[in-house]
Picture 1 (cartoon, one colour):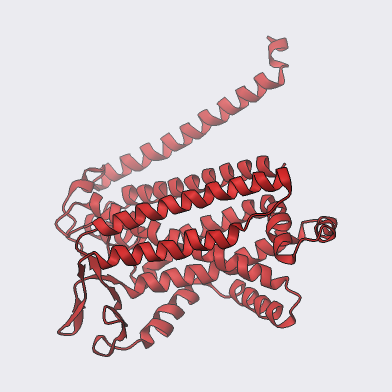
Picture 2 (picture 1 turned 180 degrees about the horizontal axis):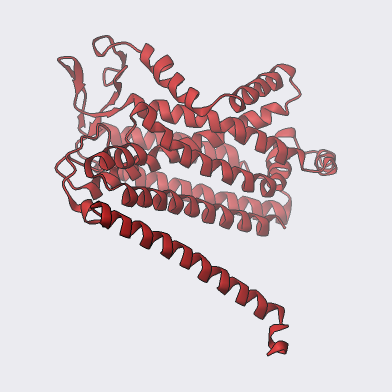
Length: 384
C-alpha cells in the first residue's frame, strides 16, 4: 500500500479526486441550505418560470421576439443582442488596436505621439464614461427625425437611430453572398499557392493586388448587382418617426463604439509589446535580404509576435464580452438588462436568474478561450 502511494501520478490523482469531492460537497451544502431557506420563506423556486409569458417589450431584437412570447425567448433575445455587439466590437477593436499599436512604434513623431496619447487616455478613463459619452454626448447631438441626415434618400440618421432599408426578397443577395464566398475561397487558395511557389522558386506573385480585386472590387460589384435585382422596404417618415426598414438603435451604436474604442487602447499596448519582443537581429536580417519595411512587418515581425500577442489579447476579448453588461446603463437590451433586470422584476426568482446569467457568461468566455487557445496552438505549429 505504501509503495502504491509513493507513485507521484497516483498521489496527484488522489489529491484531485479529494479536491473534487470537497468542492461538490460545499456546493451541495450551499444549494441545499438555500433551497430549504427558500421553502421556509415561501419563495418560489425552479425553472418553470422560463415558459411563462414575458409581457416585456424589447425595442431592439433580431430574433422576432414579441411580448406574448415566453421568458425563454426573452433570454434568447438578450443573448443574441450580447453576441451581436460583442462580436462587432471585437472585430473593430482588433483592427483599431493593431493600427494604433503599429503607429505607436512609428518613427514619425506626430503619429507616435497621437497613438501614445490615445492609449494613455483610454487606459485611464472608466469604460462607463465612454458609454455615457457616446450616448449622451455624441448621439444626443444628432438631429430630430424630421431633420434627419439623408443618404441617397434611403438611409436616415437621427437621434432615434439609423434607419436602413431591408430586402423583401433575399434571393439576389443570397447569390451575391455565394459569389463572395467563392471569391474569398479562390483568394485563400491563390495565397497558399503563391506561398508555396515563392518558397520553391523564389518568385513573387502579386497576392495583395489580386486580393484587392477578388475580395474588394468584385464583392462590391456582386452586392450592387444583387441589390439592384431586389425589392427593398425603404423607411419613410410617418408622424414623428420613420417607419419600415430596420432601425439600428442609438443604444447599440453607443455601446458598440464605446467597447471598440476602449478595448482598442489595451489591444494596442499588447500589440506594441508583442512587436518589441521580436529580436532586432531578425529585422536586420530581413533588411539585408532586401525586403521592404511593409513586408518585414507582415512576413517577419507579426508572425513572430503573434504567440506573444494572442494570450493577453484573449483576456481583452473576454473583458469586452463581460463589459457588454454595462449596456444596461443606457437601456441596451442585452442579457443583464432584459433578464437580470426586467425578467427578475417580473418573476422575482433571483437565484435562478442569477445562476442562468452566470452560466451564460461562463459558457461564452470558455468558448472564446477554447477558440483562441486552438488558434494559438495552430499558429505555434505553423511558425515553429
